Image 1 (spheres, rainbow, N blue to C red):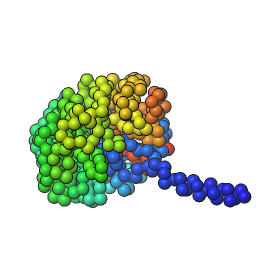
Image 2 (cartoon, rainbow, N blue to C red; image 1 turned 180 degrees about the vertical axis):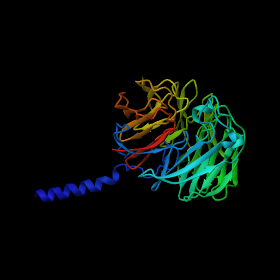
Image 3 (cartoon, rainbow, N blue to C red; image 1 turned 45 degrees about the vertical axis):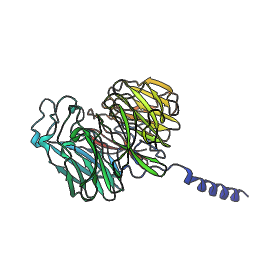
Length: 424
């Protein structure tokens, strides 16, 4: 009888396993598979340091603000060197090189490293806000066809998985005091880039050839990555710009709908859950929720709520009916009801984290916030605030600008000095 009961329990457990969230294997683009920082199913450590829960550490040959991406057994990351490694002695702009590096995700061993010198003389000068994040702020996007990067004035580029440059397309050579930061997005046979800074447009290129397929010019002060939102079996490409949130047909670039947005420049990327788009941003801090799937001006029909709290740089994350985010400069973290916008908590992190440029992830019911120079903070993903841990890696006093990437039960973090693999 006992043996039969054990067999029955085993069968029941196995039948229940598919219902559990699986940890993502691939983290192929900025903020993961769904562009929203969701790593549910991953069993990540709550605490880590230079001695604890650190699987490997790889010294970075140069600086960068982009995030790692993972595909198969490989991790891809960009960095730059030759110019702009010190404000006191930035060097010569002609020596600037942007790199795409491929490493084994299990060991950190470098597989290949490709330098790119396209259009470096058109890059912005290394000063002011540029010095906060440098010349490789855009995160790559990867699938079985290759690795796609955006290098600002250096243009969009495609590399094979063997590290060979397939094509490169310069979209424009304009610069801005804030630099460029948005990442490419893949849709079917297109790679879509927000080239607002360089050419004032969102541009879709053919994945195989790099030839332009469509262009949308009504982009106003938007430093964020467009998000693919599933609606009724189709996809909309949604982005937030000054004053307006817009949705395009990702296949043609035709505008589907627009609504009143946030009246300032926008850095955070939108996220979506169950057909609802959530946008935050701007110096005066605002959050907005819009029902996707409309036509034309939906400001009066699809705009669900607006809240006077937000973030200037870091994007939000959704978990079990709530939105979570961190303010860029105040060190304050927020929880808001995703249905109503009601703020459930607004609490300052201690010790003070300073600026937070990285966007959070959620894994195993926990939130992971990475500050630029004061460590990482782990909180429970609940509408009641508490701090589970504050983690620093001794010996690395450089800047952490990139958002975490997750593969299986491992988390990957990059700083200007090192690339880290963290796991229990």
